[in-house]
Length: 169
Image 1 (cartoon, rainbow, N blue to C red):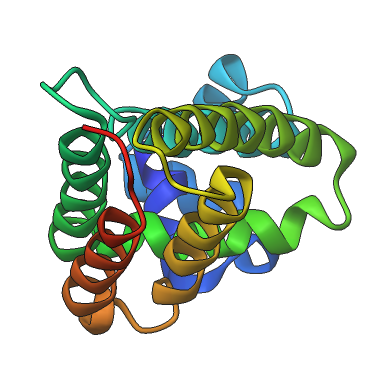
Image 2: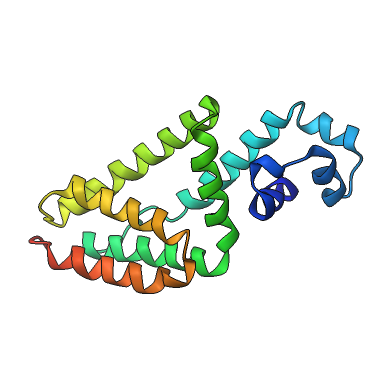
């Protein structure tokens, strides 16, 4: 799966070839088929791996909602800096989801959970229009995938703007 993830980061899903994945993993092509019967099974494993990595950045327990939001954005910023290929693969997944109902379903569930968590944190912080604030965070994260070097500035500014609209603790 890691070899497939790396390959997707390098060439996208359209360039994903099972023989190349097997070679990169140091296994025979037929052995790969014992673990992933089809290319779609391998794609699904990449989807679950990628969404699982991002789920680890969910707003964590912190003393107040603004601190939780800042911690979430800081975790995303660190991932963007340390694992830029993760964000490349998420962009590929968004494109793949337009044509692949299985990928779309997983991404929709993941994003719905993310949206709900963000909305709850923002509402607890007293941010007016917490649903719009959640969409702003999601759009910012998806936007910096294309320019990861801007992630620190974008996430810092976003946290400052959202914290400035908070009326709660």
